[in-house]
View (cartoon, rainbow, N blue to C red):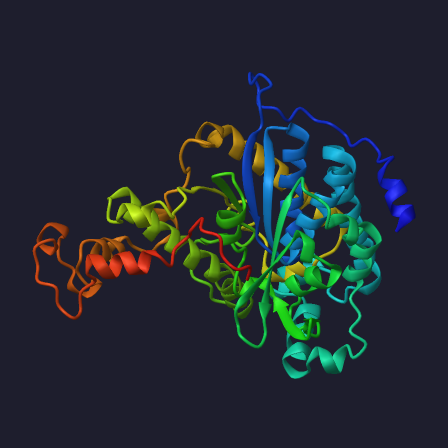
Length: 418
C-alpha cells in the first residue's frame, strides 16, 4: 500500500479537452451532492460524468451517495481526489476501470459477442449464466468466494487513509439480508468489505458479513439512497445520476426484452419511492400545510436528474456484465457528453430551483397526492375545493394525519446512522 501511495503522488497528467461551456467565464464551481446508481459495467457511464465534472471544474461535489458500481466510483473518486486533486481522481478512475477490463479478459465468462445477440436476442453465455445461477447458489459455484473486484480496490485504495478524508462525504448503501433494510456506510466505516457488500449480487457472490451481519447489493433498497445527503450534507442541490433507464418505448415481447425491462424497473423502484416521498413533503411545504414547528425541520432540497434513458437505451441488461475496454470507454465518452449537455442546459438552476418536476417525471399521476393534500382519500376522485369542506370520514386523510405522515419525509434533524 505504501507503493500505491507513492504512485499517487506522481499521477500522470490526464488529457484535457475543451470542456468548459463556450462563452462561460471561469467562476466559482456550483457545490452539489451527487447520487450514483449501480448498474454493473454501465457504471462506466458514471465514470464519464465524473471525468467531465473533474476536468471542467464547473461543479464541486460535497457528498457522494452510491450503490454497487456507484459505490466503487464514489470510493475511487474520493480517494483519488484526496491524494491527488482533480487530476488524481481522474487518473485513478481511469486506472480502476482499466483494471476491471483486464480482469474481465481473464475471468469474465460472459464476454459479449454482438453477432450472437443480433441472431438470438441474447448471447448463449448469458442464457447459460441465468440458467446456472437459478439452479445453483454462489456457495456451491464459488465456495472460495473469489471476487477480483476486491483485489482491484485493495490495490488502488488505502481505506485507512480514506477514513481521514474530509474533502468528500461518502454514503454507500447495502441491503441487510436479515431485516431487508438499507444500511448506509459513512467515511469512517468504509472498508473494502463495505464496498463489496454494496455491490454483492446474491446470484454471483456470497453475502458479505460485516460485524456478523450479512449484506447484499444496496440496489434492492436504495439505488441510490438520497436521504443521507439531506441529513449529513450542507449543499441543497442533489444531482441524481441514473444508470438504469426509467422509460423505454414499446412493449417488451421477447424473453430477453422482458428480463431486461424487469431488471430496470426493479432497480429503479426504491429510488422512485424515495422521490415520491420528497414530492409529497415539498407539496406540503409549498402549500403551507405544515405548522411552522414542523416546517422548520425540513430542508428545501433542489433535485436534478442526469438521465440515461437515451444514452443507454440501446443496451440490454447482459451488457452490464461486459468488460471489453472499447465498450467501457464508449460508455465513458457517452457519460462525458451527457454531462456536458446537462450542465449547459441546467447550470442556471443550480442553487436556485429544482430542474426536475418530480410529480410529472417520476410519478404516474398527481391525483393521489392532490387527494391526500386536499383532505380526501384518493379513491373519491373529488375536486380539491369540495374536499376542503367535506366531513372528515374514516376513509379520508385529515390535515392532522397529513402532518403526521409528513414527519416521515426528508428531514435535516440529526438522526441515528442507518
